[in-house]
Image (cartoon, rainbow, N blue to C red; front, side, top):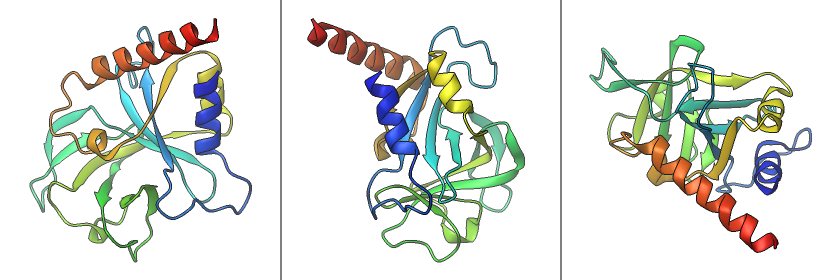
Length: 183
């Protein structure tokens, strides 16, 4: 229950409210074992809220064999929405001038690739994940996801092999710890 409340606090805001500069505006959704949807089975999704209160994200652990033609960077599968569009997750010391939204301190998500430059501080995704109003809440109520805090270390991890398994173990440990402290 506490994780669900955490997610609601992190991903919802009253109309017109803006996240504090540098304050986290993202969580990790870790698919629970047994999730049937093949798109999200065994995934770790960075989920964030846009300024219009939409919930969007990218799958962090689905690299592809494809390369971004102009730069040669690996393309990652971001999700089932608009896969023909390239989305960049990137670091920047200053807020970008082109449209982008804040994810974590100094980390942004954008469809404007000119906002970011190639390198270790950028990852390119084909498409993104998105939820209709109430959809994510329903999925959480069905117990489809573990919710964990997001970190730059996870977002830009070079080798994502085993990421899902590692975060499932971490999430299960947190659940077990919470259950022990309740009694």
